[in-house]
Amino acid sequence: MRIDILTVLPEMFTSVLGCSILKRAQDKGLVDIVVHNLRDYSTDKHRNVDDYPFGGEAGMVLQIEPIDKAIAALKEQRTYDEIIYTSPDGETFDQPMANGMSMLNNIIILCGHYKGIDYRVREHLITREVSVGDFVLTGGELPAVVITDAIVRLLPGAIGDEQSALSDSFQDNLLAPPVYTRPAEYKGWGVPDILLSGHQAKIDEWKLQQAMERTRLLRPDLLEDEE
Image 1 (cartoon, one colour):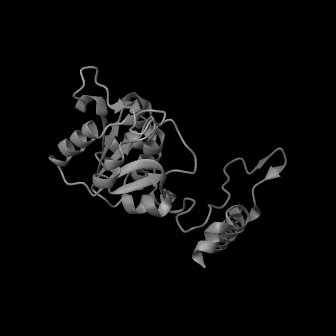
Image 2: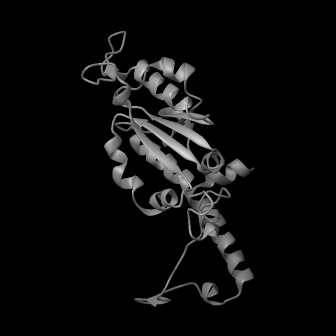
Image 3: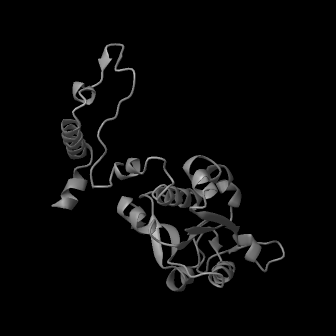
C-alpha cells in the first residue's frame, strides 16, 4: 500500500510516522507513506499556496492550482483508489471505513488548512471527504495521521498478533471487553476469577457479555445500528 499526504505543514508528520506500528510497517515494506509539501507546487515566488476568499469572508483559502498540480503529478506515477480530503463536514471516519481503506492499494490524503480549500478541488479532484469528529481543528494534518494509523495497523503483518486488531473496539460494532494483566491482585483489587480459570470457552462467553454490557452502557447507538 502507498499513502501520499499533501500538506502545508510536512514537519508535523516527522515524529509520528517514525515510531511504533507506523514505523515498523514501513520498515517491513508493508506501506509507503510519503508526505508532500504543497508549497513545492506553488508558482508564487514566496511559495504561497493560499489567498483571500472571493466574497469578502475572513480567513485564507488554499488555492486550487498547487493542489491540482500535486495531485496530477502523483497520478502520472500510479492509479489512486481514493483521493481523500479531511473535512469537518465529510463522512465520519469509523472502523468499517478503516477496514475498507486497508484493502486499497494507493491513497492520497489532502490536508485542509486555513479557512479550507477552493471548493473546485472538492467538486472535481476529491473522491471522498472524511471527518474525524464534529469539531474544527487548525488543519487536516492530525486527522490525516488518525486515518493513516487506523488503516496501517490493519495491514497483515503490521501488528505482531494480528488477532489483536480483530478484537479491537468497533470491529464488530461492540466496545472491547475489560483487559487485565499481572499481578492478579493489587491493593486488594483482583482480576475476575473467570480470566484465571483456564476455561477458554467460558472466558470467551464472559468477554462477549462484557462487551455487550459496556456497549449498551457507553455507546448504545452502536447496538441500534445493528437493529
